[in-house]
Image (cartoon, rainbow, N blue to C red):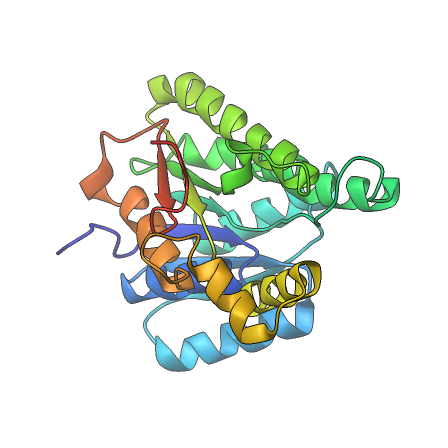
Length: 263
């Protein structure tokens, strides 16, 4: 299936690990040129170099900056657009949260996490807007989380952050639609890798289970009985960014194996 992405210019935040890195790889396979937005310069350069060997016909541009409401983000996005010759697609995959109820997470940790997401997400979108307006294939895909719509008391931060992602993205879809810019959300559930391993350890500790029993308990929360792979999430991101999804905007795709309790 031709997604119509060859030669498109993509910026991905959180591009060196997990879902963000998987998105970069999937876009590369479609023939895109990609700016890798990340904090860790050494790791970003290594990932870009590895990708150049695998995809010699693509361009991979490391863009180093912290996320947040700062001039660094604006300059970083401008640098990416200048090197690539514009921007067509922005994927916000950076940011996360820590578990805990009200009063259990330090204010410094709250500020640090909120700076990355949603505030950093907003800053990237704002900085990219002038370039997206010039594209005939403009779209934004924001990564969210299930607790944004199904909040739980032990993950208050995740509920707040991801609820804001949904609200922000829907507002952008309405406001930018007349300019030809689509905006959508992809919401992963459990995703295999480092964070799922951490969740197994937390579950084992909190429920007094061994590692195998904790993993089974988590898998049993998912009707398909397994976590998604980062590539599964990236596939949804690429589809929503493609010409095949040209009339999809203001929507959410969940990649959670049926775990969520809402449609």
